[in-house]
Length: 271
Length: 208
Image (cartoon, rainbow over all chains, first blue to last red; front, side):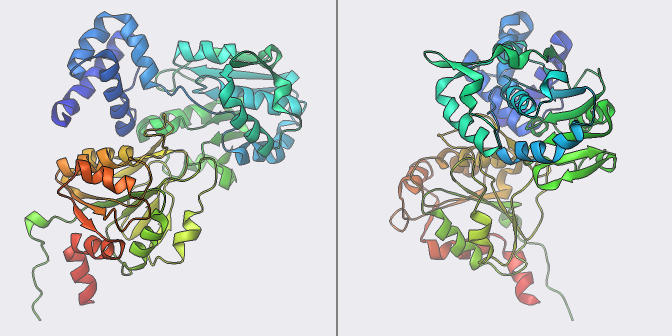
């Protein structure tokens, strides 16, 4: 399959870009290929050319494909050490601002948004904070805004919340229903969920903190540079950037514009 | 003094990476393999052992003392470097991207596993073709079998720990079912097999 697949792949991505303006042309190849192979199975297409035919003519196929091509699943307080470092080392700086703006690009279904909202509330910062939670997938944004998560995931979330230095019990923030936990509406009082693409859109606000974790791993180096450039341009001087545990600015063209702030948790500070 | 030709025979192209996958009972096998490799063994080695999620990898501590090569968890986009052993970090899929360099993903687990051996091996087979070698060792689930098959189909060398020699035979048996022509080896012979994959490198080391 691989020979033809490699030819059809850039053609499909070009078609998606021309028709829908979603730009996956600079996504990391290996993960993209895996996801497209899964999409071929789901849509019952024999080849990417066949999928392309449908994507161009059936917008609902594009909607389905978007779910395959964008990350859907995150965890609350993933890598508790990161959140502990935010609480202990970054929050003291954030306290010095009269009002705060935070950007969470690639927020997917919102697990990270609620994690951060809870942390900021416990630190007394939430009431004067505006969080921009952005993603390219409207379906994911709807889920993020709803803040409803499967009950069987909550045990892991609670454990991580405690390890992250949570001051209360995670159950204080949600109502458990039959099969799902519904997070408290007040947690999204200061959250603006919005469509934004790191591949095609530009800077829209000045912020003091960007957390973008396990999003850049899906981009190639050119697109990573574009995204980090946006983070750099939206961060105020001495603002903070949090990345995923295995993401680094080492290979970025913007590396000189950031200082390592908490090295082991991948928290950087804008110079 | 005349130097012998340095070009290896074309049909014995040295791999650009050697990949090892395992689960329960694999740490001992990998420790034996790494401990037997000489200083300066050049081909990058990528080790993926299933570990509990959300726990910092204890593998570096477990294997570091026994290995004469540099040993670390790769970060995203890191190029594969010679004389280095890479350990797949827990709770991410590890893949090979063109370069070759490492790529990571937090996509759904495959075979209930993240990292999954199939994901790593299939991406390596796709990117490196015949220039990669795969080994499946002890483990209690069938992850890795399809990935090893992909490496074999791409023309790469494949080996499997003898299921009778493995602490857990499920993983090597599943691999053997899909790759019946693979080299079947007891744990103590795997390092020898790995070294003959890169005969030129071994020769150069020996000549120093």
